Length: 270
Image 1 (cartoon, one colour):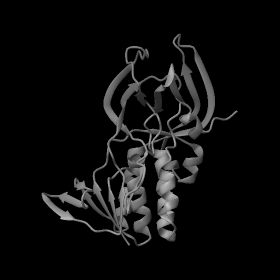
Image 2: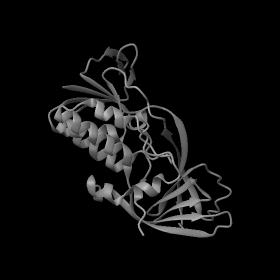
Image 3: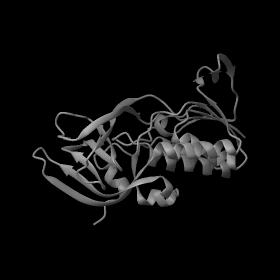
Image 4: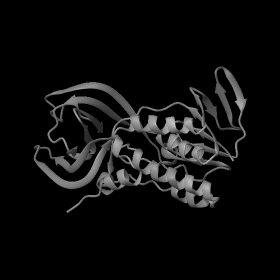
């Protein structure tokens, strides 16, 4: 089997490393997107052996109302260094023989053509996995700060604004009102745009969608947790020769979207 993966985000390199380890011919096209630290549940840390990539434990969901009164709920979660995890999966994929055409540009219609180093070539794999796609933007800023609570995901007035701590740094995202949230000691380091797209709907031919391209993101813009589970499902189906309709059904289901998506993933505990 020959698999072409268009896009080089985290679910793509995870899928490539798993398939290549089993002797499948995999080629990665594109380039890695901007990545930020993300919260995941402890169940996901254990399920995917992510302990080496944890930069902080999460024990609370904290909300501040307009008067800045604090309300906290206990959770079981962790903050993951997504960029380092991405490099780990990519390194493993290359070690297992995956070909990487970094910086390539691809076009799906009317046929799959890839531009790389100034040349355009047609590619005819058995399966095409579309992993990246532009959509609605969720802004985020990496800041240096003194957090209110080092082990909490903080929401300000509503879940449309959030702060995820990562050691001495934090990612601030959502619908930002930078003058309102009262960080007295914060320095902006870098800005990001996290893609969030709706499920792609009917899959076409031998192209399947994964990650952003399939709507596997939360309302907050995070893609790590849902995309890993969908990538594993796709890998298991391909290796077992299972029916891709099982994956297609899952790919059309957006896991997030509601104001409680982070609580659901982190597993609020009594």
